[in-house]
Amino acid sequence: TSSPRYLAMKLMIFLVLGGIVAGLCYVRAASTDPLRWHTDPGAAAPGQGRFLVLPEGGDRESPTFRTDPATLLAQVDTIALATPRTYRIAGSIEAGRLTYVTRSRWVGFPDYTTVSAVAVPDGARLQVFARLRFGLDDLGVNRARVLTWLEELDRQS
Image (cartoon, rainbow, N blue to C red; front, side):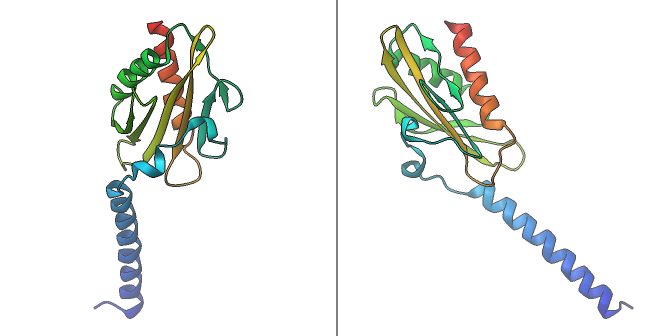
């Protein structure tokens, strides 16, 4: 026979585990509103859970690429779409801005990255705004992804 205390403990464990599973399901199934995430990287501010690459300011200064903005965005688009679990959710090369969602492997946490390119005298420079949706800290995941994209752009140049 089970004591009331044992049954209460089992119920508590069941409720906690159920809450965790429900939270994970919510994160995995969370819809994406492109209007909320397709924002101008140049107007963003650095902060916790965010990583900015800008011609001036931001967390890292954007390098100059010896090409035009549309060609640079096309290169970024190819690199981004080759990144596992990454999909374009808004924008176009013609519009000058692209936004992607990248989901983590196991839980499916969504991170959003918006990229635009600006013309400069020697070519084009990127504006990149990467940020998380859930939580306070992405443990450097957005920074690592954006730096990988920049390294690949350097290799292609």
